Image (cartoon, rainbow, N blue to C red; front, side):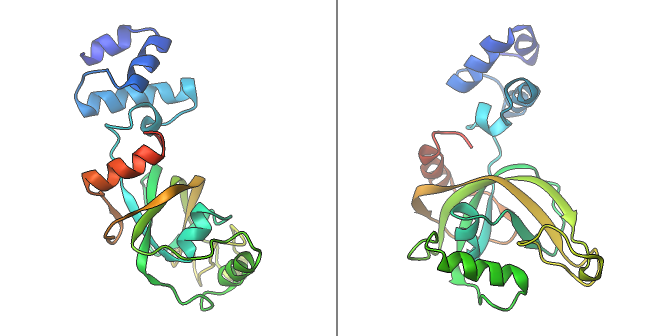
Length: 203
C-alpha cells in the first residue's frame, strides 16, 4: 500500500488497518500515517503501528525503576537533554542504586518504599515496564525554588540537571530479562516481542 493510498482511506478504515497490522508499507510510511492519526484518536504511533514503531529501552537503577512503573515517580533526572518523545521500555539495571544520597527525591522514595505499595523484591537486569516521555526541560536551580517536586532534582544551575517527564507508566506482568546499556537502546527482537506481548502489542 502506498502513502497516497493511505491518504485516500477514510480515517476509520485506516485506523482499522493499522491496528490490525495489515497495512503493507515501508516502516517510515506506516509511522508517518500513524502519526497523522494521533490527533484523531488520541493515540501514539506506537499504539497504531506497534510493529513498526522504533522501540527503545531506558535503563534505570532500582529502586527508582520500580518507583516509575509501580509508583508515583514521574520524573527521571538526567544530566543530558533528550529530544525523544513517546513510549519507552523501562529496564531495571543489574545493580542497585545507593538510595539516600540524592536529596529530597530519595527521601520521598524511602517514604514510598515504607508505604506498603512498593514491590517486596527488586527485579534486576530485566525490562519491567513502559513509560511515555512527554517532555524534557532543565531543572530550576534550588535557589529559584526548584521544580517538579517531589521527584525532580534541583541543580546549582539550570543546565546541571534535566527533567525527563514520564506519563502512562505501567509495569509488565512478568519482567523480561535483558542486558541494559547507556542512553536509549534497541532491545533484541525476542526481548521486544516478549514485552509487547504483555502490553497487548501496544504502548
